[in-house]
Image 1: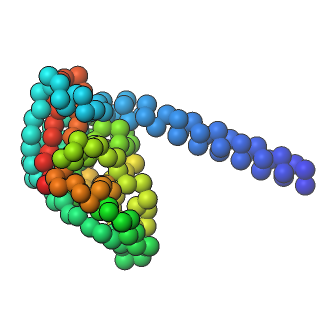
Image 2 (image 1 turned 60 degrees about the horizontal axis):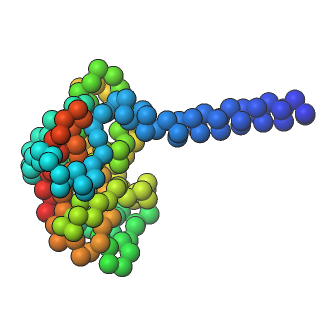
Image 3 (image 1 turned 120 degrees about the vertical axis):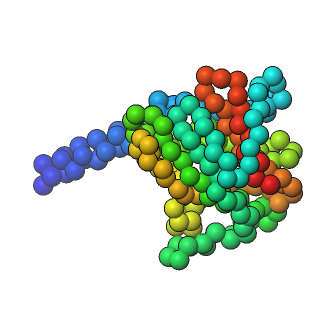
Length: 184
């Protein structure tokens, strides 16, 4: 009995160490696969070369190509089998359907918050809404992207209702280019 407890304890420790290692190296994995840079408001207002685009326009970055297929504002996120999520008072969900292709020679995991930001007309920046499991089908968060294979899915952001317009921004690695995809 003691042997079984020791074996189970050992396996549990190995699994926990592995999970901690993967979690701590999440950003490193993203940066080794996609080198697109995080953007802050100062960069947008500085001497950066801002390239504006819109829905259905292809954006070519250093390690990915993406296109926003459609954008919807919603108060409720729901799937056929999941639990609906209702936006809190004075908030709304922005659901972005997009296609993305890994242009590198190796697979990597796509973490959208490491490069893509939603920015509104008041220059407030937002990362993806985290509580979407079982509330949205086909989400792109933490999706493995194989080289040259297009993936399609959704990103969800929760923003204040008073946001009148918003864009998706991303910086192209190794350049001073910032791509701003106008969504509304």
